[in-house]
View (tube, rainbow, N blue to C red):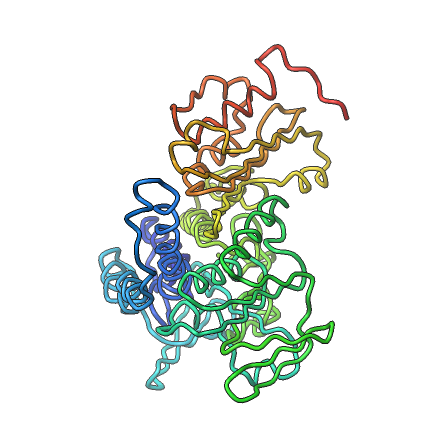
Length: 471
């Protein structure tokens, strides 16, 4: 394995369990981006603000909230969660799992062949008997804006590992990372300007974007959508961003969160006839087409850039590698044991903004584009008894997308406090293709926000009484 992040660790774990001798190569920290610079630290930065807002939304608790968020305490807690960026415990886990670790930078020198160069210049050659899995993740993309690079802008890695709060922060990018980090730094006391070329949270249901924008602006974030940055320079203590309409944004720091691309540079992919600097195309077992030994798993293949989905791919790939090595059948039919079928239409995701956004499957627009005959069910979560108990001024929205021909759920989006905890039920319903008629017997507990499922079903009508929706 090249890359000892969460994805590489999972591929290696499955191949070892399958009886294969496994070596994992890592040039940075075992545990990878998610453990030290992405998922864990970013959520650690976001959680204090969410906790304070939750308390402030409940009479009795609100009166106990008397101070401001302590930024340095937040950073200290983040450092505890990331083990001060020490990978000792992760290395111990590899050792216990029987996975050999080789530290250094790996490059292909030919089919199945790698050279690994350690930090002291020592070179080790490896030859794989069965397979090599590229699990190197992704890297940020810097927009081609004149002068931007000279500002030495923050990437998401810089933002999640910072120990000081800039007085002013300009965030470029309206995707998940941009919105989450704008939320985090606004909570910590920065005056934040978020600049997006298009809207916020593209690819999600429009109501999710609208609720997040309203909340960001209520927190004091200046949100500028459909806006291009055309030039950048530094003037004394501030970065100066010139916009397409001639306007300017000044900020002490600039954070670039405009996207990521597979980390395939400097791997020697050209020795294999592949193009460096882009994602590596794979089939549903994560094997590169035309090869019987090369796999690419996680962000590096560009299918779904989410840690949990990369780990899902890793389990499928590791088991497929072990099965092929042993000459056992590979179950590569849709939803089989050795494929990542869910990547196509059943991907769960939680965006830790305010409000939290949890989604899985197809949006209404995506379902329409896929040619499905659907019915869309919208519900205001504040109408639920569970929401009334949860917060005094609960704000939230939920949408279900129903495939009328198959009578199953194909998409769900929730927006509201802690709605990530609602998501797994929707994921199971989509992956399991649970019929709407059967869902009537999955009774939600009262009083919880899960009662939205009952309200959706009531909108559809009891089994046997449903009438076809007009086209």
